[in-house]
Length: 295
Ligand code: NAD
Image 1 (cartoon, helix red, strand yellow):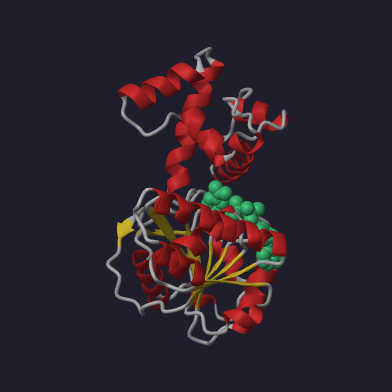
Image 2 (cartoon, protein in one colour):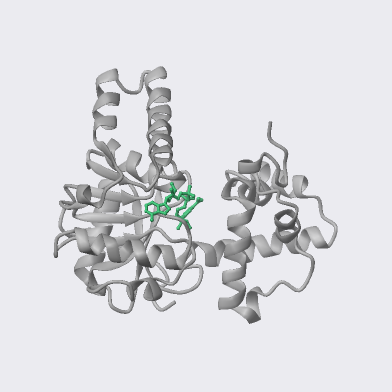
């Protein structure tokens, strides 16, 4: 990574209308965050049920704030009205920035990105929230790759302050500036990084997880490690709990990508705890069993 992470002061064009493709965990979160920071957003999916789920998550988050007296009922309605659900691409026509957040499958993403490009203005910027797929590879799906880059949010979107903006070899500076600007409008801090396996955050996080798994292989107890990292080292959560939150399946996939990208550093040469949980179908909080059990 040439420029590992550099703070970027936003000078790009302001985003008046946004769109997110995919109304899942991330798409729903991105739509909520955009709407709550006054950038109206189209939330497009292929399934009614997904859209309903995305909207109900936004309602839940707003409902909690209403209960705590942090927002008024009017504000809640305004935010919800700024999320425009749709099953059709026609709705994204006036978007300044589009965030693709569909399933982590390169073929599906390439199809979606090409479809998006056919339905937006020449000036629109198109981004992908992929965690692990090369931005240079995805850029090949576009006729104008200079208008494309990665825009990697973290889960849960409303709480995690960082957004990685990932440049391909062809991304223009204007595109980067617009996306950094949109992240800033959403109340996030953007860092601009070059394309490589793991981008920035996972290059830091996965060696940490590898160290954690090596300790377990050496006989350490995951709860003790979490306790030390959380209570005495002062991090918000320890590695086992963090892996359960991220999802063991997601972590397992990212681990493979890192091992392929950096075989000499990241290849796992012992029976790794992430792999064991993954093989047992224990994916963390989403399956109610990971390192910990959830009721
Ligand atoms: P998810 O499975 O919750 O949601 C994916 C959504 O995409 C579903 O609602 C599905 O119906 C929809 N979809 C599938 N094909 C589509 C299409 N052709 N057009 C429109 N919608 C379509 O997945 P997620 O966890 O939200 O992940 C989405 C993306 O975000 C992935 O690329 C993932 O790697 C990335 N990401 C996930 C996390 C995380 O912690 N979950 C964090 C950062 C980035």
